[in-house]
Structure formats: C-alpha cells, structure tokens
Length: 272
Image 1 (cartoon, rainbow, N blue to C red):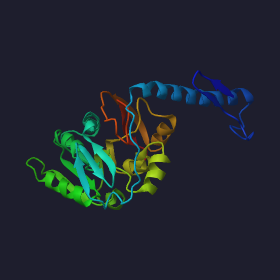
Image 2: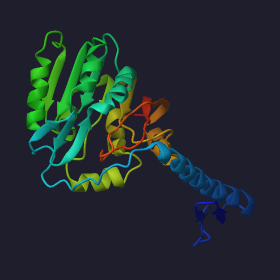
Image 3: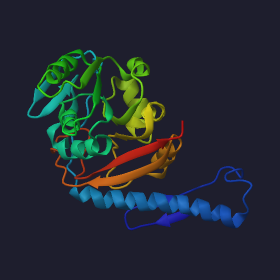
Image 4: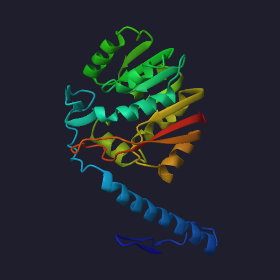
C-alpha cells in the first residue's frame, strides 16, 4: 500500500500473511488502509502545525539524577541537571489542568511541585486536602516553605519518588501528574518509548482515584491525542475528555515543547 503527498510518500509492506488474520481480504485491506491513512493525516497535520512552532533547542543528557541535582531558577525557568524542568509560559496550561481536578472540599494529589504554579491554582479552589509529592530535596524544601503561607494549612508535602510513597497516601478526588524524567533511562523508556510520558503512571492513577474522581497530566499532545495514546488511557479509564489550550508561548530555545497549544486530557471512571 502506498500513499503519495506533495511532501512525502508513506507505504505499508506486509511481511507476514498472519497480519490481521483471519479477516478476509476486503475488511483486512480496509483496516490496513485506514491505519496508513491515519499516518498520512497525522504527518500532514504536524507539518501544518510546525509553521507556528518555535525552533526549540537540543536537550542535554541528564548527567546527575533530577532527584539529586541542585535546582536553579533563571528567567522563569526551573533548571535541574541542565534540564528545563518547568517554565513560566506553562501558566495557562497549568491553570486549565488544575481546573479539571480541583474543587471546594475535594482531595487533590499533585505529583511534582516544580515552580509551584499548578499548586497555586489548585489552592484557589480551596480543596479539603492537597497532597504534593516532590522528589528533589531542594524543591521539596521550597514546597514546604510554600505550604507554610497563610491559607495553605490544608497542604501536605511528601518527600520522595511517587513510586515509593503513593501507596501510603490513599485515594483522591483529583490527581495531577506533571513530573520530569529522573535520568536518561527513564527518559528513554517513558518519554521516547511511550505514547506520552505519563503513560507509566496511568495504572497508578486509576488505582488511587475515588469514585467520581478525575486525573490529568502533561500530555505532550498538540491538538489531539493519538489512537495509541487513547488506547493506553482506555485500558485503565472508562471516560476521557479533551480540551485544547491555545496561546502558549514557549521561548525559541525551549527544549521540551515548541507548539502554541497543548491538549489537556482528563480521565475518569477507573476500570480498577
């Protein structure tokens, strides 16, 4: 099968007759053709979206683990081990994500404090309980100091990796996940190897949501989510909804996002 456009060709070559067996030829060819057409559509949409993206900068390797390196803040960017872990251009995105999991009287779990942007938006809803898990020691201390501000008495700051702490925290009405790979192995396996970086957290989120709870995360999706991404979500949740946040302005040298929009994904109704 071959699809031709004015910028690229896309082809699908079968190397085994067992592909999509035991379907007969007509439905089999229809499904294969649809999969190829989706690839063409996705590449065409990405090419069109690239016209409004910033050029971006190369990401250096993570030499010292993120949960051990000393953080610095430079021009609104949280830098840890040479990585741009979080930047202030994310404010509209963090607000939209916080809106999906927060509410008066709700319990909210936030994985990763970063610059504290999302924590502030969550607090605007006056949740009954706001638990933040942070793995970097110095960022943790910053979060502890933030939690001592008037009005933040409902917060609990938990030190450590979420993998090591979450089983002792219980269930939550809202879960907000926005962390950064701790080392190059995690970057390769979860960021490059998954449908989205948060995918490895999906089963944990589903397990720790209350009935009626909602889960959101940094999606790394520009204007929709892929079928692979959807399939991974629907393995653990019965319902997903999406909202496109426009007007994002990452700087030209941003190493982790380049588009003026991102999809906020909210998952609910755990299948656990």
